[in-house]
Every structure is written in structure tokens, then in C-alpha cells.
Image 1: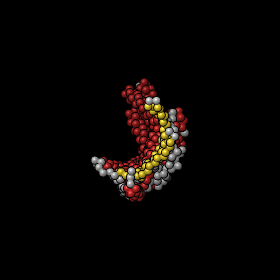
Image 2 (image 1 turned 180 degrees about the horizontal axis):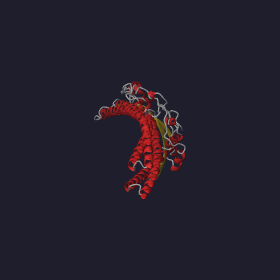
Image 3 (image 1 turned 120 degrees about the horizontal axis):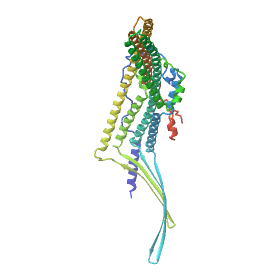
Image 4 (image 1 turned 45 degrees about the vertical axis):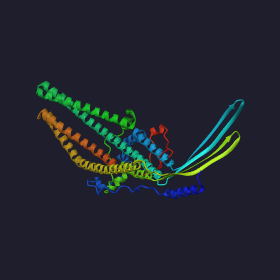
Length: 486
């Protein structure tokens, strides 16, 4: 039994420590310093003027592409996995916040016993009911720092979801563009196959009539076999790209083919607005936002580890009502409990050192992410600028080689040229046309890469949409932040 003076002293000490509860130890997070220069070193498309990034695939003015992206986002396993990780982070945050609240438990029991000594017997009934409560006062901010870390990780997982969405849209768009280009190349090879077939038939007739050497017949047959092989290989490539679209969108092939029947040419993106300050990329890329939030979480965990080195105070109390054979009495207790860490073998200091090391690793990861982001943008700008310059020359080359082939074919039909220069002219014209189509496809693909490198239209606070898979799984979405779809 504590003396009143001792009890009052303990209460006074506890009150003094409770007054410190507003203090949280550990570093105050202020965000990483600016790590980049202030201007892009690569040429800007259209002088940096043009359209915006939001829903960039809609700027291609291709309904099929828009529909494919919508399908992919509506039923994407990768988005569903990212959503699950958000839910896990939210649950961890709720659990951490609960540590700052009191806990109350109720209990009750009833027992009946009988004792007999010789001929004497006594029956006893014991009943009890009570409440126990405890509350750990967050003196030095351990719970608050852990809550800060958990909250930052929720934001990091939300940014990861947006990054998965950006990557998914870019992959669907790039695959769709390659499928369109593949189809156009297949048409080119089919036209060449028709032309080579006609040449082979004419050559065979001329060899049979004795007007042409048998060697030219062999050359014509070899060219025909090569053209057939190329056409078959190209059709197979297109089929594989279609399978990739099935995988990305979750739709079957008939639905995809039906959705893509309205357009045949490559989609053309609108001009893109590229700012001249790289710092804007840090605000537009969800992957960098995720890395920065992980950095904030690591900083908060240093404070939580430091708080464990200081005393902890908890308040506890209980009240119970007991009845023994009709006689009732009430018992209660209340008082503080103070814990002073004196010796733990260095575990507390080691935990602080480990948290600092985690922060250093998170900072290094963020810095690496920033550099990678700038490199991706710079590379996309260089690739886009070079393909834009090459596209004009490739188109001119295609026209000139086709004109040369037509003239050579006319000479061959007139009998003033042999088959060998005709086939050489044909190969040159075909190669130029294939290069022209490849450059056009690369140009659009580099636009897509630039959209993705600039964050794909993401901005901080963008709403999150629950994927179909998450809805089917019945995941809780009652706490969606930022206007998320329930």
C-alpha cells in the first residue's frame, strides 16, 4: 500500500512527464533538396509548345486506342495488385493510430462450488464483472512518428497505383501502335508478293518461250520464295502483337478486332507541352512521388526509434463488482506506470542506427530515381527529335526509290533491262518503304515514351479508381481518399 505522500509524488512526476507529450523527438522532415539543373539539354518538340498531358492517349484522336486503354484500366491485374497494397497500407495506418487511444476490456465470470466436510456441506456461488482500461501516453512522439510513417506509406502506395496506371496506358498504346504498323507492313509485303508473283509468272513464260535465260527464271523463283517467307513472318508478328493486346486488355480477339476496324493508319499524337524546368518532372511523376514519400516515412521512423530510448508512461485502471454467496463488494484501482530504460544491451541505439541507415538508403533511391527520370526525358527528346528529322528524308527516299523501280520495271517489260536490276530496284524500294513505316512507328512510340517519362498526366491529388478485380474481391473502399470512386 503506497503512502499518500508517495502516491502524490508519483502523480506529480507522471503529470510532469505527460506535459512533455506534445514533444516528438527525431528529425523534422523537410523534403529532399533540389538535385537538378534548371534547363533541358535536349531539343524540345514544337519548341515546347502544344497540348497538355492529361489523358494523353485521347489526344491521338483514335477511338480504338482510347477504348483499349479503358478496357485495360477497367480489368488490370497490375492495378488490382497496386490497389491491394493501398488497402494494406491503410490498414497499417489504422492499426498505428489505434496505439494512441486507450484500450478498454470487459470481463465477467460465474462459478459455483461445493465443499463437504463429513456431514457438513457448503455451496458457494461466486460472480464477478469488471472493466480494465489502459492508455499509453505518447510522451516523446513514438506513436505519432509511426503514424507519420504509416501515413506517408499510404501516399506512396497511392502513387504506385498511379505509376502502374501510367505504365499500363503507355504499354497498351505502344503495343497498339506497333500492331498498326505491323498491319501496314503486312500490306506492303502482300503487295510486293503480288508484284513478285506476277514477275515470276512473266519470267517463267519468257524462259519457256526461249526469250529469257533459265538463270533469270531461277532468280524470279528465289525472289518469290523470299517474298512469301517475309509475308508469312510479318503476319505471325501481327498475330503475336494481337495476343499481347488480349493480355493487356483482358478482351478476346473478336472484340479487339471489332474495336480496331475503324482505323487503319498510325495514330498521330497532338503536340506536347514540355516545360523548360526539370523540377516540374518531380511534381509530375508518380514513381518519384512514391520514392519521396518512402523517404518521409524513413525520416519519421528515426524519430520513433529515438522515442524508445526515453521513459514511457501509461495509465491503467480497473473496476470490478464481485458477489460471493449473496454478499457483494466493489473493487477498483487506478494509477500510472512509469518505465525507465536503463540497460538493453544496445538494442535501442542499434534500432536508431538502423532507422538512419534506412533513411540514407531511401535518400539514395530517391536521388537515383530523379536522375533516371531526367535521363528518360532527355533520351525521349533526343530520339523524338532524330526521328522527326529522319522521317522527312525517309519519305523522300521512298518516293524516289519507287519511281526508280517503276522505271526499271518498264524497261524490263520493254526488254531493255534484265531481271537482276529489276529485283535490285524492287529490294531498294521495299527497303525504303519499310524504313519509312518503321520511322513513323518509332516517332509515335517515342512520343508515348515522352508522355510516360513526364508522368503520363499524373498530378498530386489525382483520384484513384477501384479496379474491377478489387470490386469483385469485395475489398473495403470506405476510406478512399481524394475523391476515390467507392
